[in-house]
Image (cartoon, rainbow, N blue to C red):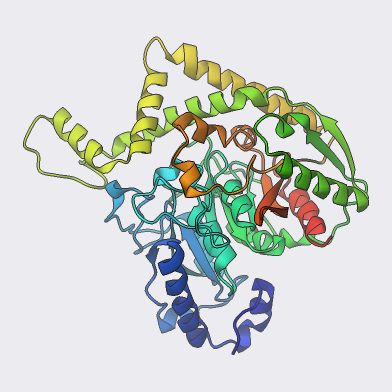
Length: 465
């Protein structure tokens, strides 16, 4: 049987599909792709026969990959770091538990930047995933393995990614797939190895808008084990896909088309906006001036939280350890110096500096104030617009040779279009809207809090144009 089908086709035929045969072929294909592109840190053992029988629910035996900072019971979870190289969680994250409960089968843990620290997925202690469209280029980060696999795997599958400052949208844009970053708190973070607690969000990556709507319906909703989850939200998101978009209002932030954004990328995004206009949507150009301050605020807040979160990896309670032959301070420093990567060390130092006495008010508290202003600016924009649309990333996927020449600050600048909505905690959907030099361009649809339905409505309409 030919298993090159969409997720919807798989679900329609699920009762007649021989899952043993399907998964045998799937894992053969996964092994081929992983060898060529490096999408996985850990590939699951082939599902046991009993597991394949448990195929009821919304997902009906559908293959699901999970980013390697989300815990799956009995499956290695490294968060892309050597300090967690041998960690095997004894429990499921809420997201993994909900996927399993609805009949999904987790096929492995996908490659990522160490603890999510990166835009290009080159900061991993393990595999650096290659873009399947052009293997000399980046998949984007930090959920690079998830997006690359989704683009390359010609069998039904949905990936679970995670975003702090754009780590779902960036790889979705670079690989030409759909990435949905939900409202902060819509999806439980229980079982996620945190980067920055006030920013982290778990969301789906798929080949179609229908796929991410399906997965969001499975993983969204309140969780008593995560007090940051909202009590409303969740439910069935497919109901939004057939709603007409005529009369909906688009805000186009001029600040997202300025300096640093490739003019060819802007051109493709404007074509997408005009295409939606032809479907009856109306657009107006607006200004979001706080955008220029978002990058500084984001990196201060994110690094401050990261340095605190990573303090627990000290060689005593979690992760790698060694023989205690010296003072505790020397022991802690030795373990952390030996097992953390360069980018992790850089962000720990930045975050610790920002929280120090004398600098906390000057940097950290100022960044929180800027964040409040960014939130207020977005809320004002959504009073008169249903969605905002801009480029997802300022450039197409760069070559690894180009990335190697960037300074850390130039790397961070690549996040300029995604960090503001992440700071605000609003939902966003990246969808392919064209190509430049043969590489995909992402169109970023942003919505107000808990308005994932509108994003999916507009995204599905755009997909059908």
